[in-house]
Image (cartoon, one colour):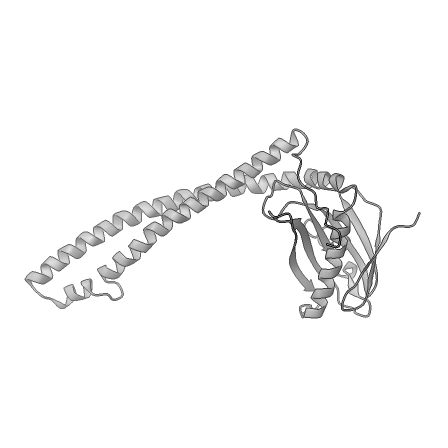
Length: 271
């Protein structure tokens, strides 16, 4: 039985991608035509929801670039070139159920980055391979295997992230309280200096009240901005901590049973 082969049109010419049998959580494509080498495709999380394994990631090379790095000599090349290329593309669906792609770190083994034309070629090949896997009948098995593979690492990261953002929120709330007290003290000093100036004009008092560097006026103005900024930033950090904890809880729940049913990545005809 022959392996299926895709033909992907690119500015460098057609690239032929022969699909190897699935190996656990991955599908590997061997490239021919305008490119040689391989592309590794696996399941991954939605870029905006790290507890939802609904996306597909294609990596240049024979391995998952997020877990290990392929040797330079194993990276894909243009048919007549000697430079290897690495990078990845994630295919997912947005909230309107439309397919989207996110390209990450396309780079070359040479000192020069890929040209614009080469980036178009690499992106087209990665997307073509990702779209093929997204429409496979065994996509659910690929996504489930990817969830089992990545969940331990994601749990460690999300647990750290929740604790970090919570600590940042506490620090910023402390900064906001300190800014409020400092502003009240500076305003009281400003009123005192204004009273003294009205009784006995003096250059030092004028400098303290003027709108110039290191004056009380500048200090008050800065604290009027800094305090509310810290309040808003603390609220954002608390939301990040809440979201990281919620995603960690969701992943732990999925470990105890089947993951929740999510929409697939099947592309519309002609998409």
